[in-house]
Figure 1 (cartoon, rainbow, N blue to C red):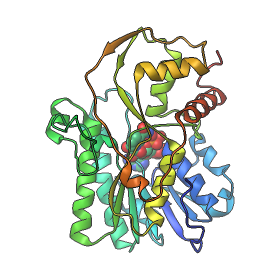
Figure 2: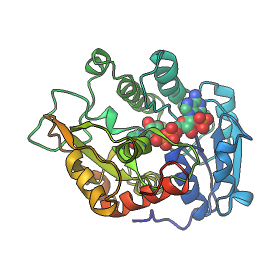
Figure 3: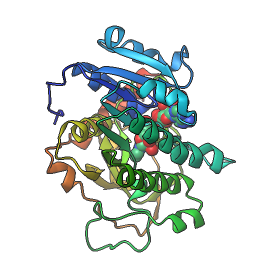
Length: 326
Ligand SMILES: NC(=O)c1ccc[n+]([C@@H]2O[C@H](COP(=O)([O-])OP(=O)(O)OC[C@H]3O[C@@H](n4cnc5c(N)ncnc54)[C@H](OP(=O)(O)O)[C@@H]3O)[C@@H](O)[C@H]2O)c1
């Protein structure tokens, strides 16, 4: 479902990390709804943001600000005057990084703290922080026989011990965001998406799209046959806007649509695109968690069929030159 709320009185809102996969779709949605958008980017002028400038209404209603979320003053300059802030920026590494403290944890945790501090000072009405299912479900003690909901949190010690720094960072950042909200009265709502797929607007690739591209392109000999929870990027940004526009929105929202194991995902892809080099061997994994987006659905959120997400993803990778036709 499209987020409702055509009446926004041309409000000014800020999107951090505007050039990323999810944020680009959010900027597009906000512009289409008549919002004035302040987008933060680290390297203005870089060709990696050209897609933003081509969005409908961008020339009138989009302003890009140079800001690193680790630099408070630059963040404040982009946020001041905005009614809402959508905090999307965060490193999402696709490989093991040599220095996780600097490359992953600090930008996620300190970066979020800077954004929230700036929002408080600028009297922002509501902050929607894009957290992750990585902050919800990475916990060996969660029940396997009932759905995981918003009361569940990833286990930070477990994340640390397994060197899952991204999950650690997202969990710490979201926890601190709610602590800050409690302490200061800042209105914070979080959206926790699972694996986000769907068409890319940007010309560069991002971690989650890369996961699908690799399945199609690299001819993995074998793959872990584990559960994947997939949500379309266009449905994620509808959820993010809904979390801002719906006054009833409160707390955190798991954002997921389709649960499918790797083998079935490959079979679905094969039925649509039979000629890519797909894996033939699977390593079976014991992973039966169920995640529920019931809370988000009760706000009116709807999602599209998996088929549509897969087709639109693959076609966009081909168009961007990231994947050959087969
Ligand atoms: N994709 C998924 O499957 C998924 C699932 C759950 C949650 N999420 C969350 O969704 C958000 C967006 O993810 P994505 O997939 O769209 O990733 P992405 O395409 O890699 O975008 C990440 C963005 O973060 C920005 N960024 C990183 N470090 C920054 C810093 N120090 N200062 C300012 N900006 C910084 C990058 O900005 P530059 O352009 O300047 O490099 C980039 O625009 C993240 O918070 C992620 O945790 C994603």
